[in-house]
Length: 215
Image (cartoon, rainbow, N blue to C red; front, side, top):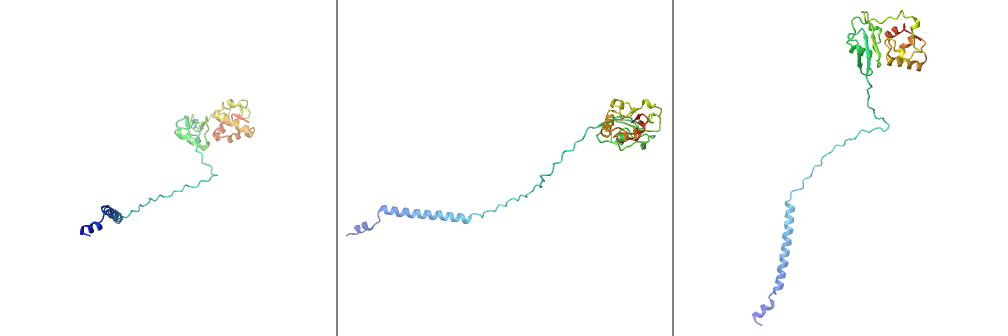
């Protein structure tokens, strides 16, 4: 056997050589990829922990199911009154509901220097249509005198209707209705002095009416 035949017998075939090279190339490629992944993991920065925002919990107040909600406050209409007598500016004035005689005196300029406020209940509440009479000692400020009125011309507060009651000084439509309502609820008046129990009639007006009316 010659030398040429020996090398020809044991020399690797071209197909086997290409297969071996391919296996080596694949192995090298896998090693390179794994090495790249390992290096990427080692060199990657550590993850930053995100701080969660703390949201305060606000609890709503416990509502009593049996509690009735508050209703809005309502304001009634105003009252219109006629202020006369011992005040600086007599006239017709409109005031808020719930006002008192002292408020009417204030809007009328206050008491005159001859006023006699002790004869009037300044704390009495005003009613719509009321005439507020402030007595005084000066001419024109004195209460109308009715001492000479004959008894036959006196008005019966138990029988008079609204129009008849309004003929009396200081009695307007609203106050006349209050007198009628009072006697309807409480029975006939037994004396003139019982008119003092009707809202809007103070001592001064009662003193004036006592000579003009009978039960």
